[in-house]
Length: 296
Image (tube, rainbow, N blue to C red; front, side, top):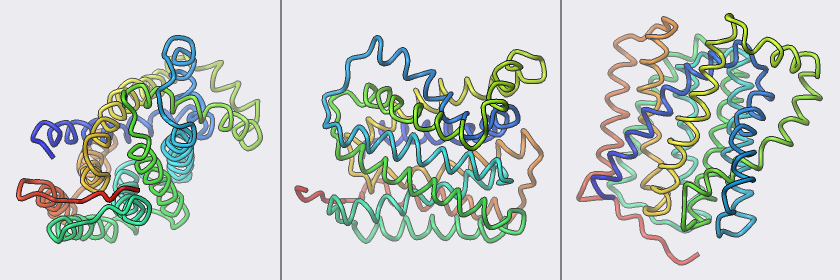
């Protein structure tokens, strides 16, 4: 993995880490399933009108859209709406990294070197320490829902790798076409037309503006910038090399949530965060992870 790609992966981690307090703001006004439908519909409509469909097999486009777009965010937003703190959500969702490595190993037969396994193990220990320390502040159900979101992200990661899109950003745009209709249907059934209509009717009120700004950040930065870069990284590098960088997201997410909402961070979380960063860097620096991909 080149130095440029490592820096890009860190930029994505920052974008996605800030996404969690932005999501918490958006969920203050919009119901969770409708928020998923809305965030992707904003991208999907101009995409269908103006952007040519990427030259990838339909099944991989659907895999990316269902994994990253639908499963990840439906479960994540539901978990956060059920009481998952944004900082803890940014942590638990990073279970997608080991999920991705396991799925890629089974599905794509990507081999993992000892150095990579050690680095991921160190990072996972850091994540486990933060999770153990923070578990007392969250009920079990929100944690389980967020883990389901992490599994969806992992499925989307491997589908992105398998798609091998010539233009990864175009794939990012077109995967946004998949979630809106099924999520809108689910929102209408679960959340109801009245609640959805009220959220839209009052969207421009002063009280709702922070939520609208949160939604705009989710769409423009977290989705377009973040997943646009992420797709390019997955195209150029094995999934098992790229995925561990997502473990940097909770470091940003916990700090951002502390600054935005006063969610407490202490010495245990800081030390564990160092392990997360150190593990990812150890797994990716030169001497590097040689995850070999056997033709699938």
